[in-house]
Image (cartoon, rainbow, N blue to C red; front, side, top):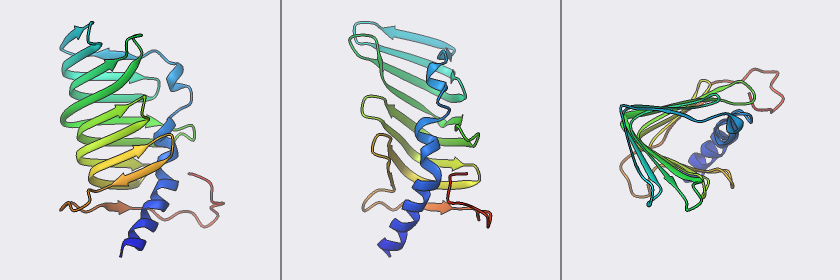
Length: 172
């Protein structure tokens, strides 16, 4: 039943992903704060590695991992964040004040490619709605969501809560 699965993913994308893509619009204007047990920076390579109870905060965005690597371009601009843990967890508020939560054993956020990837036990929650899969990819610029792997054993699991009867089709 591929068409049924695609319909559910399309519905989930409408409900779940606009908040995930942008969070609070003011978050990007806030200072980025990092805390860890250890930090090693390789300036020539543009790589900073943080290990041991790593926490990243920026506005309403909160990310926790055991290991986090930040990659910068030659101008020092952040290009990619990779986080690993058992699990890595994040939470963020949308402009509509809905909390988005996610977790997996590995997350990568490619700022240049506008791609968020959750690997190995990925779970995304938008309010009470849930998407679970071993691989979740979200292309932020095109708003394309992919979950599951072609030919993989993992199945995609989605739980959507009923909406109020007076719903006007807007995001919660």
